[in-house]
Image (cartoon, rainbow, N blue to C red; front, side, top):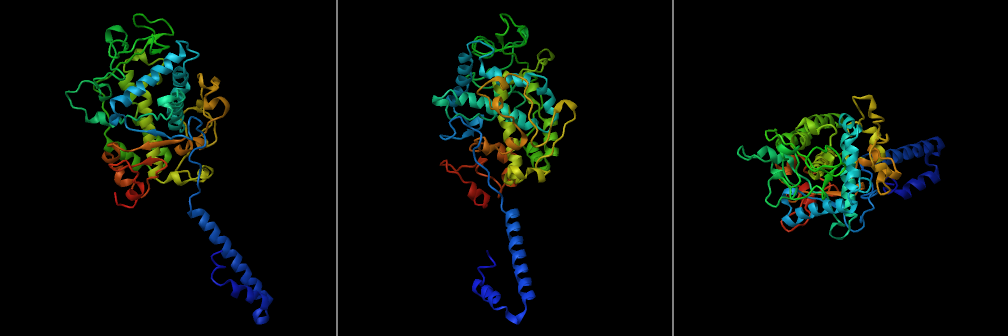
Length: 415
């Protein structure tokens, strides 16, 4: 089309007149014209990123609002309390019945054998991200003040800045007792009524029924914390996100480096078989930050610009791997394995559809948006400079002091 716009009348008059009396020359010019037209079209297709839907899979109030995930450290007391109330409401609606409790259904997946296997697979980040999304969905399903709920993210790199005289992890350190703290060593590491003002009947776990008063499945939440655990700083996390530009390098580094819930929640061997961290409300705040790290890695390496159908030809963006034969199909269209209760729950996405890496790769397709307002990690990690010119406002939003989105100004170097 661009060639025709130069002089369309001249082209047509040339063809009609058969100038120079040579039909072969005329057809040669036509061939050149067609070849150039096709070449320019192909180049345009290659250089212009193809679009994909901002939301394709979310049906929980998705027309009203996105799942905006915000930093836990910047939430007001009322907003933190709202998360606590939401998970307690889910438990109340379950009525103490293991088959009716939505949080138990989601958490059961990580308790099963595949929850350990997937940590050594290329689907690790996507597989866990779905569990986070599904609990987020159940909270949005409560309606009312939770209809637009987005799971807050806990910047666990802040633990690296914890003063030496601060005995408790920062996520435990709040006067309002939102999520409780360490467990009672004299009572099988029980948390309920010890460091958390929530009874076992209000928040229970169907495993490790060894504390006083435990009777399966209504057993207390347990935590054993290694207070000397070493947290990784924002700068070192940012270095990994910047340095590892291929998916395999990034994913294996991440899986090998971050398993904070083991040190924070189940440091005692008695709590590790089975692993029940996915029944702990802190686990979902942790994985919201994990999904942040994954998303910012994709976005700032420009893998967000790849259409889902084109991931096959971009091995740096994703390549399958696994160190164990039980992993299953690690290709883009291989089906994720979930062995717990989710596949039998009519409300679960995996009840009626199989989940794959290709489907999971782009977070806007799931109606997820990360809000960086008040987030210190983005700056401390060095990503504020690294991501300039690349930050996709459908994935992450920056705001000014008035709450206005300033991604365009930031990407242009003006903010």
